[in-house]
Structure formats: structure tokens, C-alpha cells
Length: 128
Image (cartoon, rainbow, N blue to C red; front, side):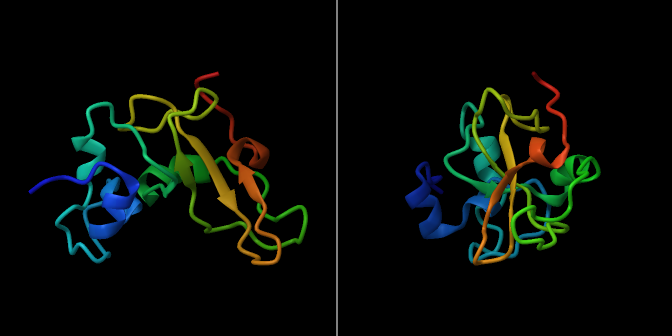
């Protein structure tokens, strides 16, 4: 099986969140064929675009969040996916990745959609 390398190739057979996943259960169109392979198959464990952290990874950051409402529209930010991309020198160390990743939560209100870096929500960066 030839592993996809670009975001476009990944999107044809799977999705970025599944391809980079740590959790065991697959819920996307690949039915497990590509689940979690990207994180381990790419030589530098690089990330080719934004993806949602698996809850196992996200939980250590989620417990540190002190701001749970959007400051612009008041929508709840609780239980929203923690999104990641990188590598990013100002980001957070995430288990399984060689370099820090930038982490954020997007306001779920479609009219607002403000993108909050985790440091704006009270999560300290451990690699700065």
C-alpha cells in the first residue's frame, strides 16, 4: 500500500485527523486502512495541515483551559476540538511529535468563528 504524502492525497483516501490519529477506533471513510499511519510513516512526523488532536492528546491541555467562553460572542468553547498544526516554534510539545505544534480552539458560532490560541485560554507553553 502506497502511503499518501500530500494533503490532497490524504483527502482522497482518508482525512488528516484520522491519518494522524493516536486513538484506536477509526470513524472515517478509510475504515481503518490509513488510521494513524501518517504520524508514524512520515520520516520527521511532520504535519501537512491543520487537524484535530485525539482526545487522549487533547485532555492534558483541556484541563488547563481557564477561559471557556468566546470573548466576542459569548459562545461556549467547552468540548470544542483542539486543533493543531506545525511544526511551530512557539507551540506546545505534544506526545508523539518531534517538534512543537500550534494549538487552538475555534469559536463554534458560525457568525463569529474566532480562532483562540490555547495561550489565550490560559494554557501555558512548556517549551518556551
